[in-house]
Amino acid sequence: MTVISTDGGEVLLERHGDGTATVRVHRPDARNALNIPTRQGLAQFFNELGDDEDIRAIVLTGSDEMFVAGADIGDMVDLSAVEMMKRRSERWWAAVAGVPQPVIAAVNGFALGGGLELAMCCDVIIAGRGAKLGLPEVRLGIIPGAGGTQRLTRAVGKFKAMRMILNGELIDAEEAFAMGLVSKVTEDAETYEEAIKMARDIAKLPPLSVQTAKEAVNMSEDVSLQAGLFMERKAVQVLFASHDKKEGMGAFLEKRKPEFKGE
Image (cartoon, rainbow, N blue to C red; front, top):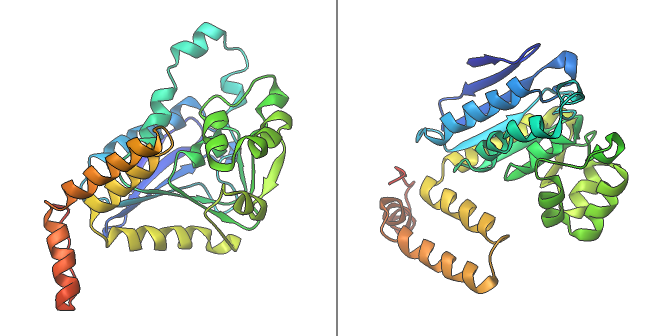
């Protein structure tokens, strides 16, 4: 277990020895709110994991009662516009969104504001039935500023995103699932276990194909269909040069368990 102190809390990293890792936000007295040290700790761990070839899937979570209640308002209340700009906080979010391995968010309790934006940096969101999700920034005189207006709109469409963003409305996990914001809903006590099970299942697969698939899907949001299809074809062609492609197809034909090397 590796720990980074975050001014009243911690960010924890646990490597499980099976190709998976868990990154956990732990600031219970602040409802896991994201202050600067917490964001920096998350970025440090995700940058580290992104370079670790032994890690094939990552779970990001908070506690059994709380994912992340939002940004730490005390961190921002007296900031000027120039001070806010100089933080360059987009670097910290990019570390989570840009890691090559799949990231699964295990969400219980509140995922609000920066907490929901953090979850939306992930590739899969598994939410406990009692979870509440929302972007209530307009009620504080600002707007979502870490990707909320962009990622939510891409996930659920303009009109559902507008409904949530314009009045800061919170929704429950079932509604989030129905609108396409959440990948799966579980009982609250099973959220993390479901996420780590999915991570372990992914970790058994050939990592080059998994990471290439993630890259292709993410790019589909930003390019035309024709450009996306071209990129997809080229990605498939490149994977035909990999050891894991030969191993996977050979094992299928020989009716044996494959041994993927990430090569």
